[in-house]
Amino acid sequence: MGRLALVVARCRRRAPRTAFAPTRVARHVGALRAVSRCCARARALRRLHGRGRAALAARVGGSASRGAGHAQPARVRSSDPRGPAVSSPIPTTFVEFKERTERPRFLAQHYPVLLAGSLLDVGCDRAVLRGLARGPYVGIDFSPEADLRQDLMKEPRLPFPDRHFDAVVCSDVLEHLENVHAIFDELVRVTKGHLLVTLPNNWNSARVRLARGHGAIAHYGLPLEPPPDRHRWFFGFSEAEAFFRGQARRMGLEIVELRALEKPRPLAVRMVRRALAGDGERYRNKYTHTLTCLYRRPDAGR
Image (tube, one colour):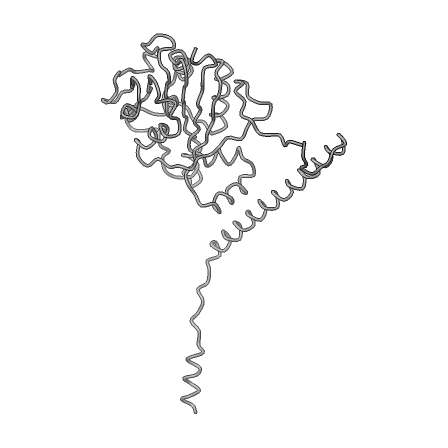
């Protein structure tokens, strides 16, 4: 009987459970609370929206329900360079560029209007768009692949007449130039149709390193030797958007589209980040890596 009792006791013995580290538990609890706050905020906004519609219906003597003859207002992206009274939401594309050639291919895929006619590629790097353009192509850069090698810091004027190209592309270049405003004027001068400009969100690249308190920030810092190239400007998403909208007003351009680019992350991660950020502006300043802007001349095609 003694041996049988010992065997039964051993069979009933369970393996010890692995205890979670306190910091790990705290992170999970914090994430769940953040998602809960996000859901509560969404429910509150829905209730507020319902009360607002009911009050409006009572004021005009109509029904608060979505009935026939009561069209819902649509969000329209205005072509007015001053922008609509309330800014339209900026769409987001989740993409990560691991190779330098991936960015121009992405732009060609999402903005095919740029490839239809003559194209000027300012800061062409490896001139990837040359093989994709259907019309005449000219690339400007320091690189050997460029058709025209020009230092825009020393020679800001582009050697082309006014309204010479159907489209102009300037992708992640302006932040490298001290005379960024003069170069932007030149981009507008030589295009007769569309202009695509992209700017990086420098806050995003610096966020993790600053939070950890160590490491150098790419394109900035204090190197031992003079670098061949570096960023001259440090700005976030909000400043890039303000720059694009301000240039449209100043130069009389139409903004066809503003688009945010963000690294792909699981939906749960994005929800937690948005809940912790508190609003859309802070979220995009922290987590988007690029802002693209497609302009068009109001008199394009004339």
